[in-house]
Image (cartoon, rainbow, N blue to C red; front, side, top):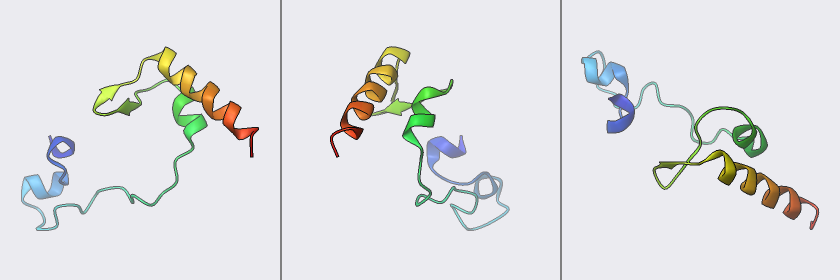
Length: 68
């Protein structure tokens, strides 16, 4: 519920007035290769990506990596 509302669990429980006290730091880099290669859910535009789409994205990124 907290994720859907964009607030912390502590805020929902009334333990704090800070709505985002246990939110992750948005400035932490994400390894796209790892995120798209591992099992788990990756999303785009609110919809989960299929395994085929994740593989296609990885292929495109790997192709572009060689064009530096």
